[in-house]
Amino acid sequence: MAITNQIRFDNLRGDIFGGVTAAIVSLPLALAFGAASGAGPIAGLYGAVCVGFFAALFGGTPTLISEPTGPMTVVMTAIVASLTASNPENGLAMAFTVVMLAGLFQIIFGIFKLGKYITLMPYSVISGFMSGIGVILIILQIAPFLGHAAPKGGVLGTVAAIPELLATAKPPEMILGGVTLAIIFLMPKKLKRLLPPQLVALIVGTIISLTVFGDVDIRRIGDLGEIPVGLPNFRFPVFTADQLTTMFVDGVMLGMLGCIDTLLTAVIADSLTRTEHKSDKELIGQGIGNIVSGICGGLPGAGATMGTVVNIQTGATSAVSGIVRALLLLVVVLGAARYTQPIPMAVLAGIALKVGIDILDWSFLKRSHKVSLKGSLIMYGVLFLTVFVDLIVAVGVGVFIANILTIERLSSMQSEEVKLISDTDDDARLSDEEKQLLDKGSGRVLLFYLSGPMIFGLSKAIAREHNAMKDADVLVMDLSDVPLMGVTASLAIENAIRDAHDKGLQVYIVGASSKIQKRLERLGLFDLISPEHVLDNRTEALRQAVDHVYRKEVVA
Image 1 (cartoon, rainbow, N blue to C red):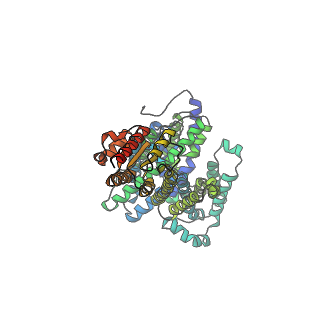
Image 2 (cartoon, rainbow, N blue to C red):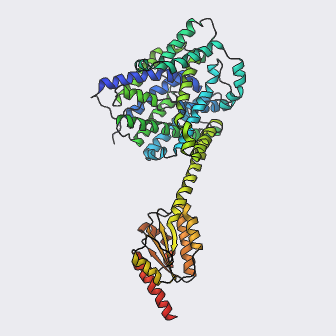
Image 3 (tube, rainbow, N blue to C red):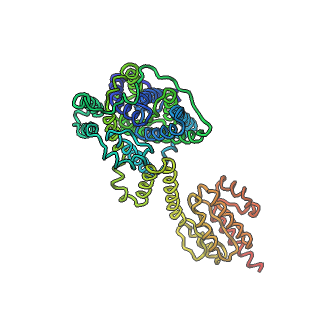
């Protein structure tokens, strides 16, 4: 596997044009996310440069554009608020350490090839989670949109403060936020192809604030502190004993979210380019990018849908576009960052607000109740938990409930393939000869038939048939159609075989694979069953079973 991404120069014009366009799209978003996170606008720019460059260089999706995203910003906002509240002196440095930890975990996920499992969760959970993040992002923009600093307490604090925020709203800043949204929503599609509406809104909103509202006290980027020009001051990991566990958990959560966000975007890139990304390689690239971003004091990033789509639509085909985009933004950081200081916070809030609206999964929200009532309840439950409780709790509870419901449904269907067959049964799976043999057994031969994967949800069905076992002389346990057997199902089968043995029945095992035989052997069942009674052919087992019944009758 090549260490670097697919860097080619056969489409240099398309890649450069794609990178330039993606950089123009990224600039206002990076500033907006930096301001929203509490780490400062420059953190958004550093994140866009670092994650964008190294993910493009080492990732596994040639046309993917990586940068701070709405979901990553929402989580980073909570991390910054939590750590700075508990440790005002080192809180921000600890937050950037969490970004490094997130990158480290992403590299670990990639090395152990866990990419294919990251997005292996029900769509109802992903939809509720992403929509919840969209709602959080929208709520967090209410205060700056109305001309105020963000209230303490995050989402809950903002919701509680809404009446006061509305009562003391500043009309000039509301107008600027409204103009920003109007430009983004109403800008004609033809113009959108030439210029990103976010950039147009940023420029127009800033000009209006300096001319029409030049004499009004408006909150601007410069109010957050002087924006440094030049290379960042490198940050080293900072830990405290009492926050170590919290930082570790936050790092895992941030890393997992980045993986999900990135791989979902990579799938979109695949559909547009008719290619196939390398999940594990992409996670390693993202991890390297986030570690460097944390060292440089930047926001965490992931694959960004908007930037990726724009990049592809403007002709990019290789990682050169992502590298070009990052280098252009670096030029802004090195020389032009100071010129962003007059940008109003309300304009950035309007841009971030639109991102939050776009994150909402409107398509599934509108029709989830029609597709599946249970899926809809899971989706809304995850959304609620994401907004008002905790992101990890939301995903954990959602995945647990969705998996339990799925297992219950599959087990219910599969339980029909667990049955005890005697001479009175007319089972279509049996050949004519096998039916005749069962008839000759006169009910003294029982065929315990199992089919499909024996997962733990089927133990109840196995126990049910076991309890229905009547007096007989022989039990034929047919495992021919069982590809795998879980521990719980193995124990249920063990109970059935031991019970049959204790009642004096002759037990035959039919069609067990080598793996299943080893498991039965570890359970000690082959101490009860002679090797001659472990067969591959069901018909032969039934013949021997009938012979045993006849011999027993003769002896009697």
